[in-house]
Image 1 (cartoon, rainbow, N blue to C red):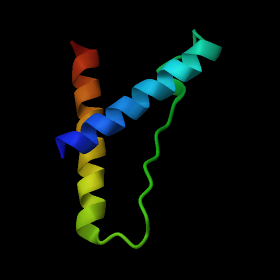
Image 2: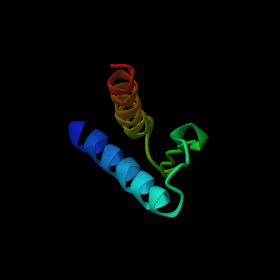
Image 3: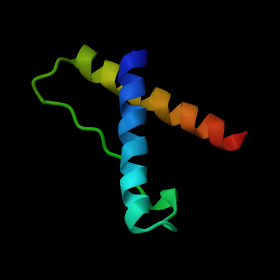
Image 4: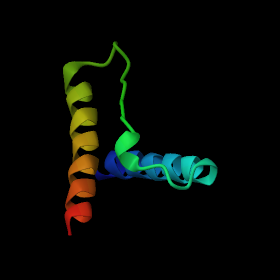
Length: 66
């Protein structure tokens, strides 16, 4: 799971950098992230991706609170 979490984190960082090139003062609180998965994935695969995304969010909140 760490690879998937790192990938999601990387994509989030790239998005923020691209947006901030256009609008440097935009607060991240205006963003809402949505992760979609193919409907044909089984429940275990969907759960795996959800846990990877939650892991990224938890790490982000933890680092922001310090």
